[in-house]
Length: 120
Image (tube, rainbow, N blue to C red; front, side, top):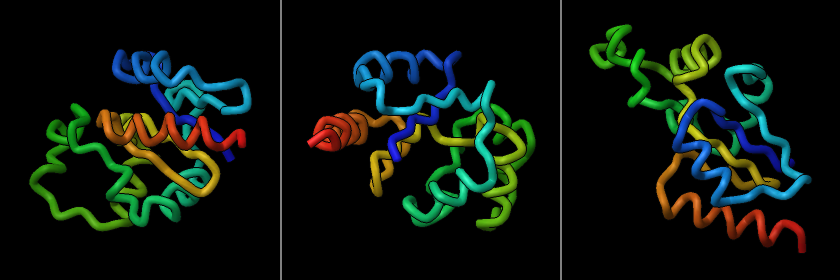
């Protein structure tokens, strides 16, 4: 599987997609117009190790909803991501069995390398 979960309105995601320049064999999924399914999220969790690893604490609603004052469980993270797309840390890039979560330069460089090597 080769897929990039992103938000088309996010300038950071736009910049990263331009930098990666994904080949046609990678599916792009805008999580606002094509929400992630429970099955997709569960598959991401298997690769990531936890739902917490996929959860964005910098989403505006994190503080608005008072989540910063609560102790969240794995099930909470899962339900919140499914309920509100902005809680998914972006982008999430899946290349075969590897997952790259977030926008750190090191992470994006590793994702680009995995994409480049996946065609071999």
